[in-house]
Length: 133
Image 1 (cartoon, rainbow, N blue to C red):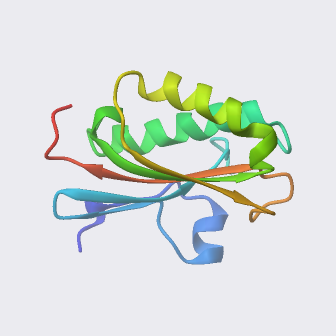
Image 2 (cartoon, helix red, strand yellow):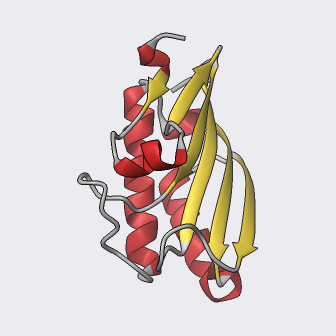
Image 3 (cartoon, rainbow, N blue to C red):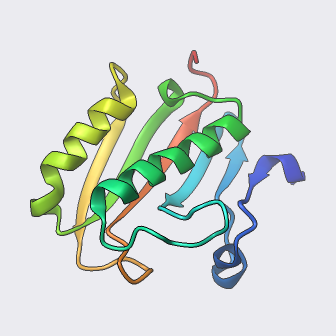
């Protein structure tokens, strides 16, 4: 596998947990759960759901940019949300704002906790580069 097929932020968590942010497999790009890391690899928005969702979407865009893809090429996403009942409406609003008219397959899971203290949302997704941008 060549290095351009793998995307990393070069943050400690990638080495600590042994993963890449994304990896290309043919025409598909499989993207690990994105969360609200900032550019320095810090997690500044603990427990602030709206701020974490905005930063997570921005990180999703960084992955898309790396692969020359757009939101319209996301074919599926899985959202992990702490206290889903409380945040369901915010998730729906943010999803509609992020995707506009595009409608990827989507699964939203309510979970009791995520990896980092104060983390309340994580989004994994798949890009199909054959779709029109």
